[in-house]
Amino acid sequence: MRRRFASRAAALLIRVRPACLFLAVLALGLWGCAPPPRPPSPPKPPLVVLAEQEPQDLRDIPQDVTALLAQSPATADLDATFLTPEAQALFLERFRAAHFGPWGQTNATYGPANALWGLGKLSSNGHYGENLRPLGPRFQAEMEALCQAASYPSLVRPAIATANTSLRVLPTIRPGFLKPTRPGEGFPFDYWQNSGVWAGTPLIVTHLSADGAWALVEARNAGGWVRVADIAYVDEVFMAHWTALPLLAVTREHTPVTAPANGGAAFLFDGRIGMVLPLVDEDDGGYTALAPARGADGLAEIVGVRIAKADAVAMPLRATPRNLGQLADQMLGQPYGWGGYYENRDCSALMLDLLAPFGVFLPRNSSQQAKSGEYVSFEGLSGPEKEALVLSRGAPLLTLLYKRGHIMLYLGPHQGRAVMLHDIWGLKTLDEGGVEGREVIGRTVVTTLEPGRELPDVVRAGTLLQSMAGMTLLAPGGNPPATSDRTR
Image (cartoon, rainbow, N blue to C red; front, side):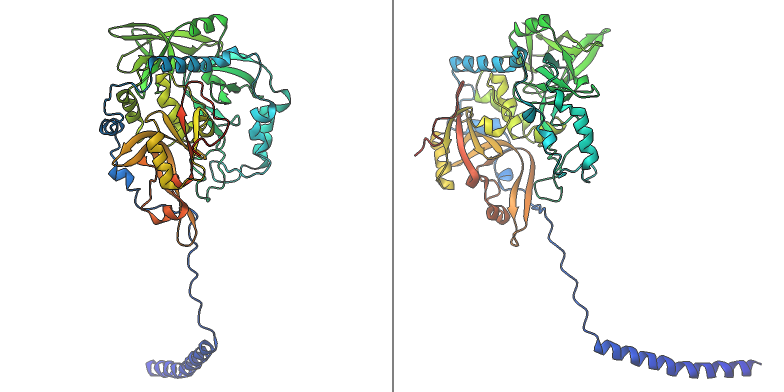
């Protein structure tokens, strides 16, 4: 049996081998006739290219505003004033008028098209939500129903922010990103984020959402939708008490503002540079100020608070390089926050908060800030000519440098180059293939006027200096000149 089985297996093996050989030959023949396989396609270049190394400026220039000012001849005397008392008084007068301005309004400043402009952006369906998917028609219908555009403005009622809060373009916390794969879009550029306001900011409410959860408000330098829970309505008695007092400016970031409660302290809100409150009294132990709280009926209640002298100052803060440096150094390195996203600052919010303790009022966005003094155009000038003009005519700490969409504060010369303080997301880049990207900085920094000038991709796209349009010499009540160019 074993032999018979073995012989059958051998015969089967003999029969199979020619078949295998035939298939192998056939396969080789077919291989010889087929074209060679195509090499794999190269991967598509990414739309956003991030450089691996940060700009040299961030390593070469001390990220210490006070130290830089001490080294510059124009600001070496850290206790010399860069504004006269008379000039500061004019600035403060304008600041107070703007700060309390909403309470004097008898109607809405903006018509429906401007106040509810976000609705007009929904028809293109070009915005993406937190899941990076298009928001779609359902979101549009929801926003249109909540905004009740046909009945705007539905009221004019004074109020006050009782919390640090966001001014939203639409009554929602959902983001509205443009196509996230595009360079310079996606996070943190939520286009439904307009600005932010600190607690204690006077407001005027002009409209309510259909569900009553959101209020459309105007503040001293911006407007938008806020959560009703973050504001409280005020009456004539409240406003008279609030406006009759001098102002106290918070000068230390993240100062807890608390009220006495049951032998302890109840947290009200986070004190930030740029926040101002009415000043009641001052003694050796600190300041007594007023803070707002929202009552159960939605009306504002006045709460007395104590703030240490190390954390605040009676306005205006003396305009010295030391004082400005101490404020700026607290902001250095803080994350960039488009429109106050996550209670962080963008370029224009940095400017207005930094200068507020000195009594200097600035509008909210960069183009408006560039109109807050004597505007000197850079039109027709080369990069070196622009920098030479800044060094010769710019007043350190009182000169704003402007390019479309970005604003910066001139600090003075450092090793022969003009240096500036700014809060920046990133520098535009172009690689050798023409693919656009961003060299992300994402924080408040001190740089020259040409950060990234040593990076080929930044140079290829154009430096900040190349695109700078002009500078603004701040002046009380200043307006742009009749001609946009006073240098030629």
